[in-house]
Length: 201
Image (cartoon, rainbow, N blue to C red; front, side, top):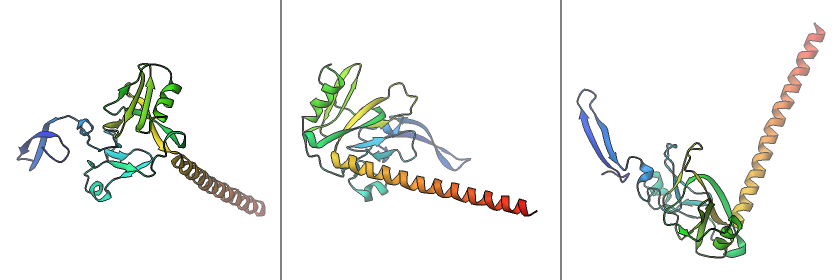
């Protein structure tokens, strides 16, 4: 068993002078319980495997740099509870474990149920009804966009996180607009220079 939490069987290849993996259990790292820790998201389609959910950061950066993600992530901003919090939709997710099923109702009722419970950290609503999570989110997994089992997970965040996201989005749009404007301006200037040179000839 290695640091990934997987049991592995390997054989030594004398010709290649290296170990060859021929069996592991669980098969994927993301199947290892709490591989990315609380509020971490695991992805088999990414080379880094673990990342923090939006609005969270590694609990121990030094551990993450050593590829030990078991400590998971912590909130950047504490929840204020009820009306001062909101939800961020994260698509293409395999939902965390230990969900509490709270009946059918509708999506709005599901959101309201989680919003009014200060211990509720996320909810999901689909054809099976409403599920909420109390406390840490464990074993959340990001799936590929063509995976039929993907769901949308709504994670509760402080409203300031949404304001910061809007500011970052605005800054990004300003930077992109400036770069595009500069490229267009240079293109027009080059076209004018070329036109003048051709006219002189």
